[in-house]
Image 1 (cartoon, rainbow, N blue to C red):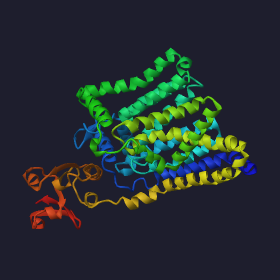
Image 2 (image 1 turned 90 degrees about the vertical axis):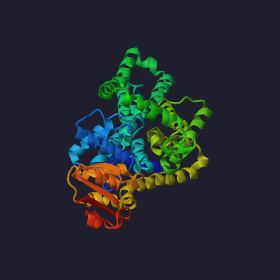
Image 3 (image 1 turned 120 degrees about the vertical axis):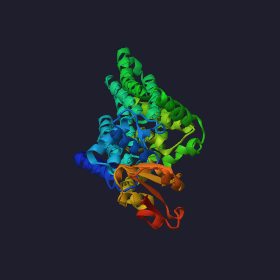
Length: 488
């Protein structure tokens, strides 16, 4: 067993650069392959895409718009919209541009985490960190690092804040970057960033960081943390007063955290246990971490500063969002990061220190040496195949097909039949905007008839149209069940 361990370590030492490149190529493939093929998801992804598109059209970089009006539903500051807008201007208006920033920042975040783990724990742990991230299947599925939502950017900013906070125990000036990361997290996902506050406070408290950093550095830290938010708040207030900011507090903070079943999201306090079921590296990390803590307690040994940060971060994130009344899978995505760090350290520690001192566990070591890397590799391959699987599962519906394949004038207003009121209208709108800079209005056929707008069309199911609609209206395009018509 020791000979095998020596050969493995030698392989890693001699071919570290090659192995690192291989893992990052696999990660890039998992992030970017077929990124453009999936239809835009309704709700958050489509909403972010529309907000960014209309920021460009309105030439307003402070307020987000939806369907030509100021958006008071998506109550997030504009950092993610700015990133999407930049990608639109570079790549054009299509799903790849909408999602590129999320995948890109996820890749950069992994590079930051890789070098942090390498600096702290060595080459083997650095490689494990990339493999562990790849093995977290949830991150690559819906509402993750391959989506136009703000989560990929938020994960990157959390990694930046987490690693700089950890390194502040070595060099206190790293705390400034941690503060700036918090400010940018707020500008990306609003009050979700507040989970970073107890992490910073308790880490500095339990590691005597307040004393080491000193008061003047703490003042600069608070300045880095609050000044960008304050400047954005002033700019937003100058646009529409307290309208947006007050709704952020009442809707996005208070209602989401205190009202059970808000927006139809019903779950129990144990909801986030599923994160460990669907992401094998997290389950392995949790089990190893519990064993490690038990051994530390038995030996009456103190935890390292890094171990304290992992423990504080994990308990803060999973604990807070578990007691919050609104629970969604992606709320705890940033909680994967400390568990990935723990896993990258503990696998090496278990084989090199803990199990090696117990001769009776030779068979156990052999089994774990095969099973743990195998499980993580299989999970990583599943994540890498998301780009193959999801385009086959998520097919474009007839309405999207009609909007994309019809000869519609630029800037048209599409009257959408009232029967589509509960359909994915946000994704319909972004499809209209990408295809012909369109706008949308849900209305009856009678309303469409009464409105005197020349560049307008009516989209409906054929069953809802008059029997003689083909003779009364000009049929622009149709499928088996739907049609786009225009007044003659």
